[in-house]
Image 1: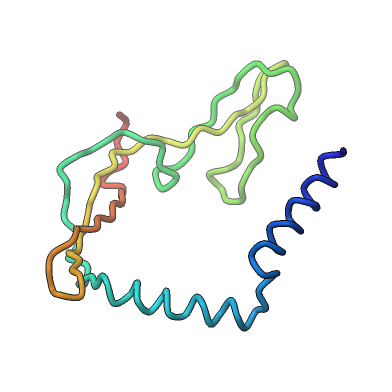
Image 2: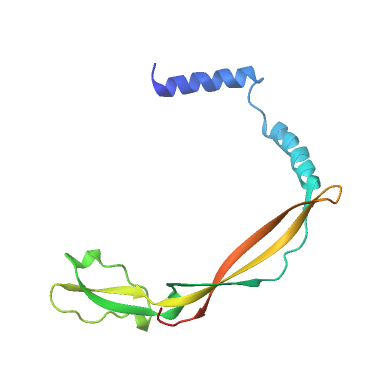
Length: 141
């Protein structure tokens, strides 16, 4: 038997065994109580403001500009595509080389924020965290 036919046959048997496919109305009616009961189980407070983690990392940062380097390439098509803007004008390279843009590095700092979550009885259940990084300086690192 071909795989597609077996899949159709199995799908048909599964739907028949469960009473057939649900209508959109039946599906929505069944999901609404689940969403309501799930929302009642856990309530999370508001996010606490962003705090610095103290961690820094040297990463490529588009805000720090672009540095062009002439590199030997087989064809010009292998070079990355260019964006608009005066800093994106490539230099004239010697024959057999192509100008390739590299995003400059910058020191990135990391921040986090959190919120506490509770069940319907008001008991603490867990803490949720969010993280983000942001450029703190455009220095060569």
